[in-house]
Amino acid sequence: MIQHHPDDNLLVEYANGTLDTAQAIAVKAHLHFCTKCQQNVKRIEQIGGAMLDILEPEALGTDSFDKLMDSLDKLALESPKGNIVETPQSPKLGKEAEDLAKQYGPLPKIVSKMINNQSLKWKYVNSSLQTRHLVAGQTTHQVSLQKINAGGIAPEHDHRGTEMTVVLKGSFSDKQGIYQEGDFIIKGPGDIHQPISARNEDCLCLSVESAPVKLTGFFGRIINPFIKHHAA
Image (tube, rainbow, N blue to C red; front, side, top):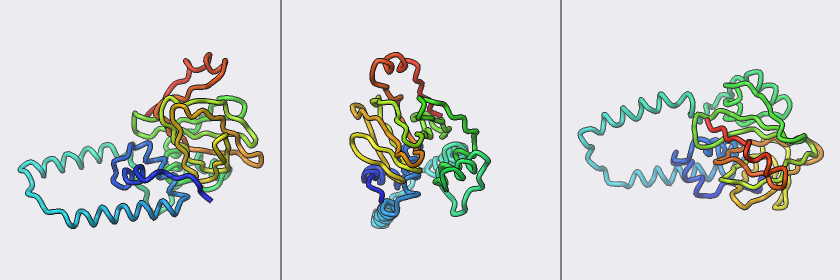
């Protein structure tokens, strides 16, 4: 059962289309698992539609049509990189996404689409944790897959900015609790934790970070200057 969800403010921004692209990807991944939040987003959209119906119409300016066309042209140019709209059909999986799905089961469509557009090159952070940067068509956040081996322990770390995590498969725990498939977790500066994967299976997560994490301890002070933030 999913215990951790985006707050109402995030869901409102998501439903209104005003949420940052990378953060919207995290919310979209959570919605793949969570019928409760799906229903909440639908209600928000219905309320927004009802409010539009009762608003008094206003006369358009002489340049309104030109501005609308410019906006549509801009959206068309940006959509190949940043589009997060999903069609009802399941995307045709590329080899990387297919291999990952065979190992961990069906992934959220938005994650599969991102994997399809690039090759997966995992990098070890320590003996238990591997990470893979994903290109998301934006420049404000780093979007990554994080994989913790069964029974593995990730390095203890703090956060320099906001980190959103969605558990795609398996589970992990820290001092604050246990997080299972579909859970949506937000950490920020001062939230020091050390994720530990369950012993029976790997834990696969999607993470969206506004700034690099900060490893704690003696070795962390040595390594931190070399930790880079990849937003794209």
